[in-house]
Image (tube, rainbow, N blue to C red):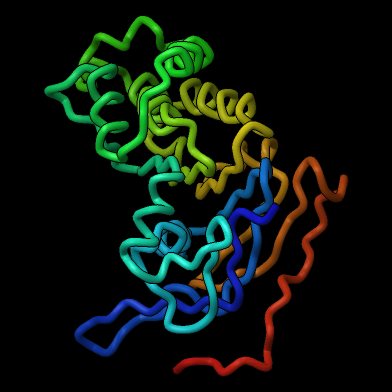
Length: 242
């Protein structure tokens, strides 16, 4: 089953000087249980892809489908977002609440019921059972990142979007996060944006984006054993917006 599908997607951010194309003819798909890594420098369009999936930005050309639906209006986009676990770079936990209280608040805000047994099972896997009663500002960087991951997993999402999950972490904590994501592989489809090449070992496919354009795709562990770069196919017959 195809979970996410982009077909020749262009996204433009309006500016005082007329606008900037953040995505230029992006085409890719993510199937159920796959892990897709999108790599590229800062400002290349990685986060814009995630925002388009969430319906936070709309393409000026092309098609985005998530769970077979187009997140074109706010009502439909909201329904899609409620099925997605989104780990942001900045983090969303409230320091005045404990980790456990943050998880409850998160589930209520999404209109989803909290599966307490699932949360405690995941906390065990993430090795953070002992921090559930602590406040976010009492945690190390690695603990906080894993607590955020627990929160977005707490209502059993149908898709995980992870924006730079190892950013601002030291080597040890980065490796811990990579190991956790590796354990989740095959249980939930994921799209990960990152500069971190260590994440390639857990992915089915790696896409490279530069200046809003996909420059190529590299097969992961489930594809070519040599991981050759292959061209990304685009429909050149379609009109290119200026």
